[in-house]
Length: 295
Image: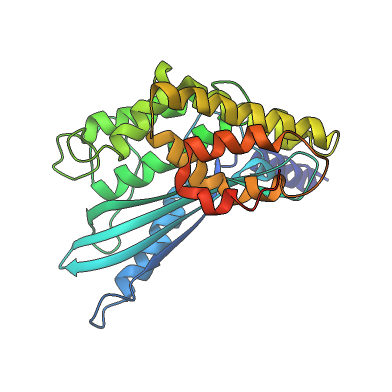
């Protein structure tokens, strides 16, 4: 009986204190010649353990509350222990009382160069720059957690965005691209700074309204849920007036464009005309998709 109680207690603790992310990590090395591919397999395993076993927050998370996400790394060049790569980061969350998985983030970072030695220890230390590999992976882990939190609570992601911004600050003197304002107008520097800025608060508001008041209510009132999603997109249109072609607008529609088309091409009628006016204005790059939505 005593052993049974210990097992049950250990199971409960394991469920409550589980790490925040359930992340699929893949390293693609098809573009690299040579024969020593074991290092990439070791890297993939090491990064998977790092992302999924690190406690990124102080929150207690049950296993079924872990965030489903992915990091796909493509190695473009290799020279000794120096690597040039890109990283595709994605995350999703399940709509309430459904099995539908809604995409939250879908972003390709092309400035992911790093140094790695096989079996190198990977540890998250927010106060120091240990390697670009650790800093980039840690940065996106926190961005994923922050954006997920924003879909459940207004400004729920702010602590995680601020932690990601701290990584940016520490990494700026490293010499690696992606951390500084002068590198690009759409990189890790701007992603973190925009997410914490009051100027772009409507993006955070839209994440909450779109998911919590929109998608999560579809099982109760589909028409009202669709109207709430239109209101969320309207918030983005207001942001677009003051900050046209913003990075966060791109981030939103890179993840959501296909889903928006799916939502508004069937079901109870809402004001698709108003919606389309806003979509064509704030995300013209997706115009071909928007034409699938009927008035």
